[in-house]
Length: 249
Image (cartoon, rainbow, N blue to C red; front, side):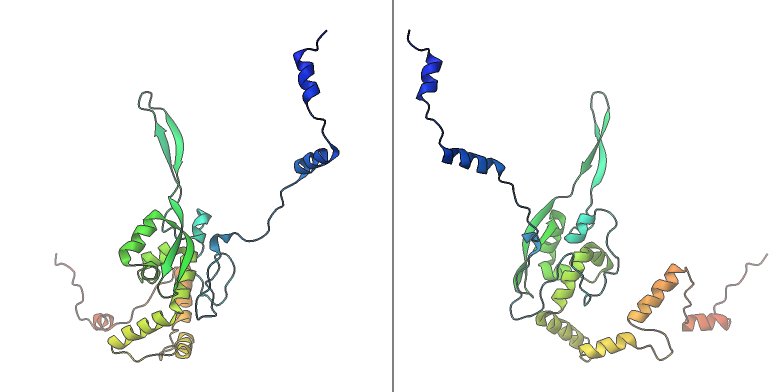
């Protein structure tokens, strides 16, 4: 009686050898190793002709002044990139037919970019939103965006932008630029040691200046104390000049 078709197929298969069985067992029992190295996203290049590296996003840097607005309490991811004021926004889906609402959220459009810094001479790796990218193109580059002096710009920088701002201000090109602006205003140039001493000294009338003045102002704001402004107008008002008169009855 001729063998059936399944029996012929089984007889035609080659018998597995010991080496093939060992290879199969090794391939199935191999586990993936866990890497403990830092991600390459924020591995910044070396700045040419300088020993000061680009600061890290999360590592402590005691030489950098603390960010005046502190870390952002919401959307912590924005502390490690140039996000501006972007954060996750929440809303509803609304059905047109039944007007049924369903919760949803909008995440900001975040990209990983290499932005050119003219003062550093390298590409800086960072996370950045498309809105901030448009602002960088509008002002003329990454350096111009970081060196903005308006309070709103400083708020938009965040902790990571504040660190980049400090590193850009240490470059000779930016120092020369600030010195030229000071000279154009008719002010004498100042050395770094002189600036540090002035920040620690007080004014002739005993009022704190520099960092001490900022600390005193923060303390008064926290205590909700009243600020006394001594001006010539206030002195003249005390003498009776421009005193408000009561309307006659």
